[in-house]
Length: 249
Ligand code: ADE
Image 1 (cartoon, rainbow, N blue to C red):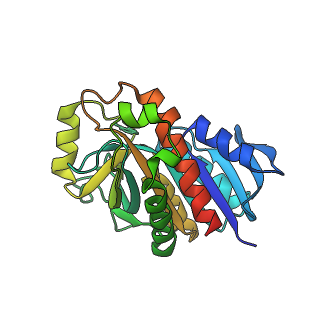
Image 2: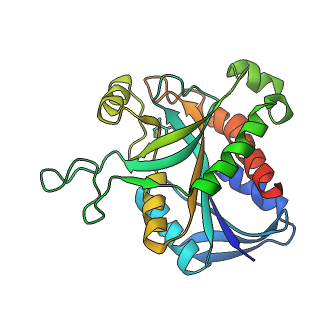
Image 3: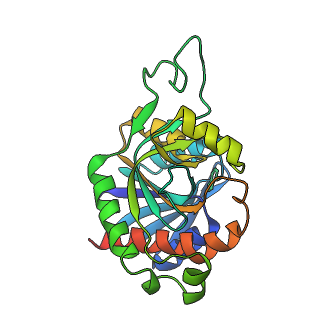
């Protein structure tokens, strides 16, 4: 049976998935607690990624080397960059790029040295299945979220996007930085802090990878306000519902 690795950037999300696994047990490796067991009949290993590219790459490597996962899915939140990537929307990555990688003039900006590429594609079939699950979940937000969260965050008609996600070791929280990112990577829909590193590790090992992120903020001057509440009341619930829907398909 295929083993699915699930990396989550949020404690709340991880706790909810662990609670849904009837037979879970924890194994501690590299200071991380890996939750092993079954969810909807699939063998899964669930772990908190920690924050930033290096922590996420270490976690992904342990999932692959130690727990032999056959596929890896990352879920969490991201800041919206594209004008239509609004708070409450979900982005399923088709590719990821490290926006803070710059070894120019030795290599083109964003290119990862010796990989000959700046973009790391996700697995098409896995991403398609997750996007279908996300569309299903977002078609009826009220089934997954409280009325107060829907009203407070204006989540009336959330959308699913598929495209480029940019990752880097910065929480983007100024309009100026967001605009600079949009200029240097015009196709990027959203920004976060781990995905492209995990995509690189998965390419190294030949492991199919997908990433699903709920837009929690617009990566601008207001990016920090209500972040914690959004993660708890919206992003974690969406992630849980999307993963659940995908595994039940
Ligand atoms: N994750 C969620 N919002 C983010 C932002 N604005 N920058 C980086 N990572 C994020």
